[in-house]
Length: 111
Image (cartoon, rainbow, N blue to C red; front, side, top):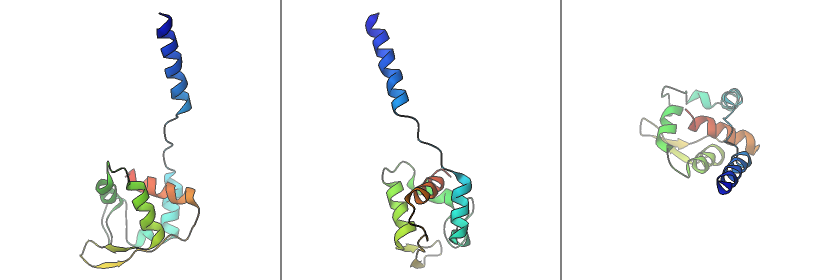
């Protein structure tokens, strides 16, 4: 019985030590996307010149490196293939604030 109480106490301590990841701030992410012109090519639920954020989230679902790959796309201006088959340089965000960048990417992945 003593070991069960100890196990319960340790489990509770671990839950407090590792809180669930905070949900992205959708309003801040949408504002940053709009300010940077992302909404000219992307929308949450429909493809424009670029894929919808839902399509991007589906592409990266379950991939361990999804966050890192999308951070690269929004910060390093790589060549990207558009839905029509053409390629162009992806526009980089005009912020170096890593918290803003991570929030935007987490929001996209949550779609």
